[in-house]
Image 1: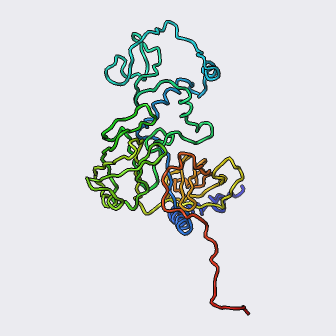
Image 2 (image 1 turned 60 degrees about the vertical axis):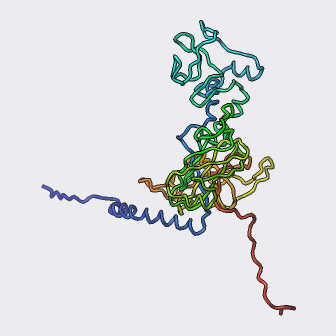
Image 3 (image 1 turned 135 degrees about the horizontal axis):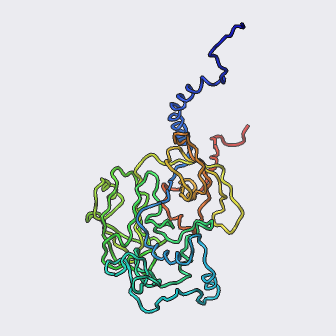
Length: 396
């Protein structure tokens, strides 16, 4: 009988024993590599601000007119044939509901006093709502008279490939302040959030405060390093003002002394008597976002005021999140950039090694250009300084 030899030897890959070693080494190296990348940005990186687009928060008053456009478009964003014909001819097209009453019906809004409390800007006949009311009051204030031109003018065009906004308070996000900057404290006061000696113009979108002064409680974060913005706006125009904090005439030095994390009484005296929002932004960290720019190129399209072409930008790994439509400002060229795409660059444990994204330059006429920048921007490029010696006469 032949001899049978048994063994437990197997043919294994050459790098099989290196897997556990490499896995353990990688987990220990990632933290060091992150700091290494960050230190490289600190040497020659461009400082600036990163504004993250808000996804929640206090609803802006400009959204009360947006509910009308929802009645014109279906769930896919398409208008019916009657609406299109109305835009083209100005005549009324459509089909009336069978058996609906055209009499003056009970107006129902969320004021707690109506029979159909909880409905949204509609009229009702009997037990069932059947007709939209263009003059009702909704969650965000009175609904103005139906004007298709005004609605389309304020329509968010981001779905069409454009990123311009029509509201200076929310920048098209639908939430007050619109953006929150990285390592900063950003606050925006609107007329419906303060106490004033005047009234509010509810027919304007966003709401406009008409007063000579207003009061509010504000909290300046403890450890504030600098003031990025302390401005009063009437839409996209700055309004001159003076202010007091706890009854003391306000100055920049006073604001910095009040940075104790406690509530303070702010009173603002408005020079133009009309304002839409009061913007406060404070720098609360010495660690900021860093960027690395490639060689920027200028185009020859004269239809743009700022002809810098879109480019790819690299950001430091200390940034926690970056999404499309975020805004980047730099203090070297003094420009604003909007993020168009964000490829992820991290390990399987979500350790961020950096960000690479495609951006375009925001034009000066876009409202995004109103977001505050940090530091003074150099006005011109610095050329080589020639060396002058002390010798006179002909050189040998």
